[in-house]
Image 1 (cartoon, one colour):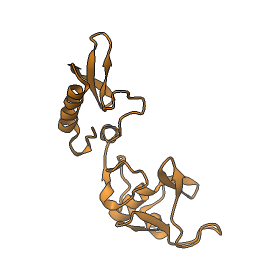
Image 2 (cartoon, rainbow, N blue to C red; image 1 turned 180 degrees about the vertical axis):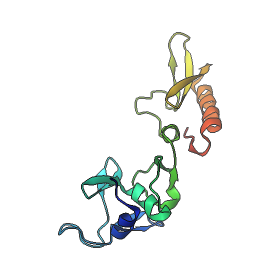
Image 3 (cartoon, one colour; image 1 turned 90 degrees about the vertical axis):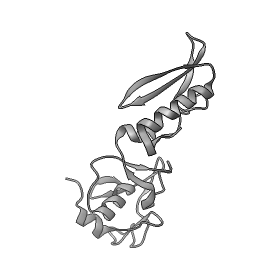
Image 4 (cartoon, rainbow, N blue to C red; image 1 turned 60 degrees about the horizontal axis):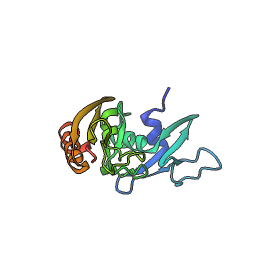
Length: 162
């Protein structure tokens, strides 16, 4: 059973302007009142309560809205530790993926663009709901990137990251 909204609000304080979440009560000798909640977990802040792990940005959402999100919570600026209220928004898996930076394995320098060996041109693809959609082959990677950007904006709107 996950933690209740009442217990989250009882245990944690949250400042929407700074994005900081802190302990309102001491649950052990190691956690004094006022200590910032959570520890770093691959850029996110994560906290343990009653033997279960929770992301601090999810707890912030619960504190402000009074509901546990049924969908992922996205960080607009891609900074996983920036839990300011204006940086958090509801998402879904496809939109959350759209808001990621380009892969570190990408050699074209443009998201959604790669070399298409059979045609000897730059290829643009976009992934929507875990399905890759071919956007075309182009003479330059800039043209392929423009095709990706246009498709991403049309499909993902404010979540588009190019």
